[in-house]
Image (cartoon, rainbow, N blue to C red; front, side, top):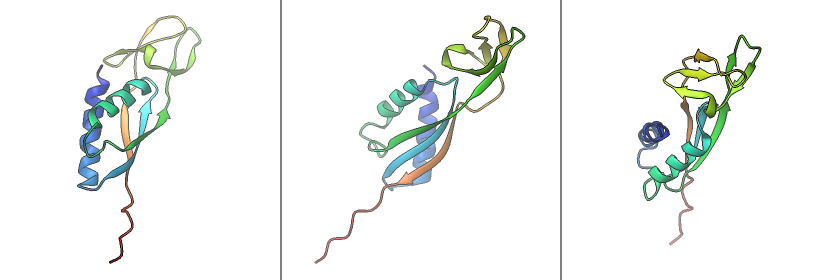
Length: 120
């Protein structure tokens, strides 16, 4: 499950951007060939009890498309990714070299609002 490594790098980037401030929300873009469930599981596991433990993860989809000689032309999902940049046509099973795209991109790290100051 290489998503754990991807999410570990994502968390490092979030912490670098947030510093010591508590994070409320992390917004990412994920390739359609990368499992959202696996990303969410890894994020929950790796952030539990840490500075990002309460952060909400929002994921936007970046479709990865494949055009094959069999006539298939459309977006593909995690089941169509054989790893190492190899894609399998869901129409006929032909092997293709996939485009070089980021699997996860960090779009935003939203800092939690500070609680209102208490009066004297």
